Image (cartoon, rainbow, N blue to C red; front, side, top):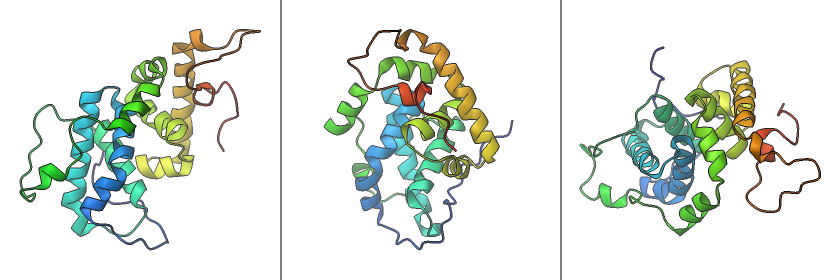
Length: 208
């Protein structure tokens, strides 16, 4: 299987978009990118490394950015770097960055908002996601956690719509097996913890 294309060509859109500065990108999108990275990698260390790598890649690519859907571009970079096994195990090289670039990147460690978000995220669900094949995990996370449509996911992952549907269907089936102990029993009401029904497909139909 050939490595995924981690090039940063953005998802195209007919609506023109003004490119923000790199500082604005980091300030506006770092929490969202970290959240996605955490739910893809399943652990704080790899999520931090992946988040920093995403913004280094963005910085180096801004000059060649073609106006499009910027958030879709970020999702594509983050997801493809994850799927391509490009999470770093060593210090990121900053060749070509300005001297103060390191200080402007998202800090190692998470802020109060991100910590609260990860604390509230159901650990059983995260462990079940970690058990999925990476391709299925990415599709399920983008759909059921990030709220993207099948068409948007197909653009981000650069796969056919039918492939997206198959990965999400199979990924949800695997999740149900891993989380059977969480399914409400007859006559039993779930009174605490974040909702998992939408993620597991226990309620609501398949997205069209």
